[in-house]
Length: 172
Image 1: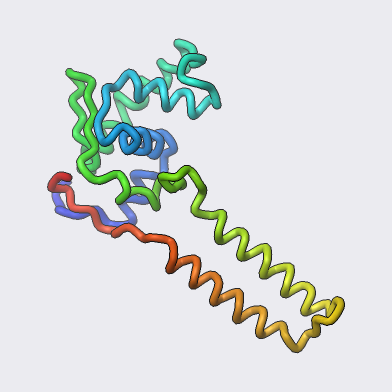
Image 2: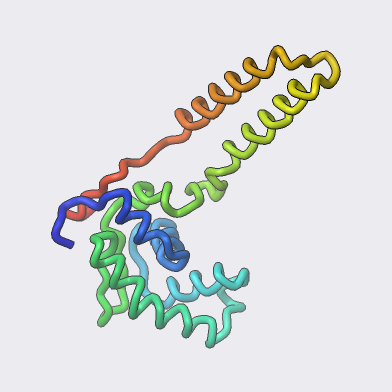
């Protein structure tokens, strides 16, 4: 890659593929470096909802071919990993937490969408009660419910740590 930083669009493009996301997630869990074989086994296991020992040869082979020929070279071209195809060694060039927003799950395993979904469901229920004038709730408080919802979404967004969008490709 000729530029020193990846744009948000490039990161979205790179992480638009589930296998690339899983590869970077696994590298993050392995402290940034691993051999190809355990990476292939883990990605195949995640894709098929199995343990690593239950993955069969055909499942491993499909993942191996696509990682070897397509996904690892692309991650290397974008400066995300160092990939040595001869030694079958992959090393993450950055702290894996930088990529967390693009991987779909936080390091603790919980989905980043959960807090937003909970606020949205609660707000929808409160707004429905206000609009329908159910019980002691009247339509007069609907704007208040909308405002509280906006404040809650803002609070969730502020509490959630955000990683930088641009990533230097000059190493860890």
